[in-house]
Image 1: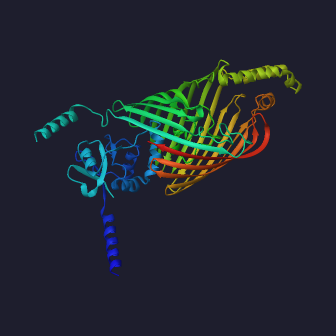
Image 2 (image 1 turned 180 degrees about the horizontal axis):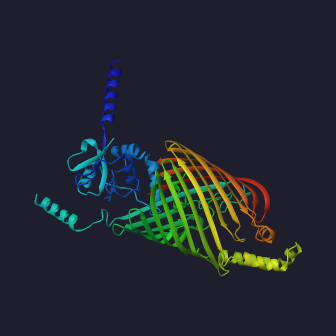
Image 3 (image 1 turned 90 degrees about the horizontal axis):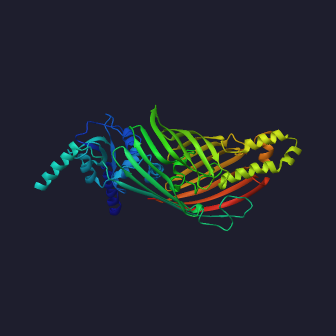
Length: 139
Length: 385
């Protein structure tokens, strides 16, 4: 009984941890765009669009393979699994029609890069957001 | 502290005075490797390069691509491909400079892939599709590059993301003895959600000096018409018709065309693709081949199962040209295959594939009407890096 209770407790903790882990799509605080919808973000990250809604140049950056934020971004925003994405990019890389966003480290690395370059757009765990970056989308 | 300040000044100077590309000086190296093994149950049907002794060479391909971003708008890319089917001769499949004229327009110059088919752009990147190899019934054009220029324009219409690719160039397949000139085409493709559509048209002019694998075959065919003049005229055709036919069957100076259409659907779980091509036609020596494929696939997480039906048939002319096509160049060709396979994504850059192909030959060049069925079993490992 006791073990069942603690198991339930663990599950509820785990479940709340999952719902808590929000991911934020970020741009530099100096970027003029305030919110960007999911479809536009997906277009930028899939190489179909090279500009922000205000027309300025946009360069997406990814977190490293295997990061939790990357997995949730891929499924929630791009709607693709890691291997579907690999297949998508392998169709573009070898034809010069596109290159995948550069793998740029973890939450802190991406935040630092985005903060310092108004062209960049990335995503990090919402808890890592600070005033150096601007959240344009959250999920 | 002082260091930090210096760095801040330095970086702000850079940011404000020099339009540095975000990722300038990046050298990108990508590659793909497929290792395949295959075996036929017997040799009653013929598939180029495969037999009942089994083999590893046919589906083994290594590709290495190096690209360098020169500045914000210019990238130089080279791709070397070594094919087992070609005795591992290394060929420069792509080598081009691309210039992005605007967000929507890319220009490329150099050696490019001819966008004949739905899978043309990544024909050799096995990882990018489910089959061990694209079905030979449809993917039949024996060369895949053109030296020239192209322009790709991307545009949106409603919910559709589209692109139009226009190219012009010239190509001489190595040791073929033919020069393909004024080689031009247009490929249109559109994508909306899970749906994609594609249409393309290509045309070129052939110059042949009568040598090389292809040129000599053509010269021999024309000589064959002369050599069998007595038989042809005995079949009810006149000498003048034979003279005309000799001209018609001479490839050099002729213009040929090719077109293809395709539709694809992929919702992540179920996917389907249908492709139809007609080419190379308009000249008697290369009878128009009507080819099609339909493929369905279902994805179970890392496992994808698929089934394909594909067929091709040569469309012969009429009159004396048909007589020559049938009896001298022996162009009767009709075959179909059912391909059943599975792909397992081992991790997100490698895949393991199994495939069984049942090939039925109704007509074979040189043998006329036959009715043979054979099986080809294949396994392959594909990686991208």
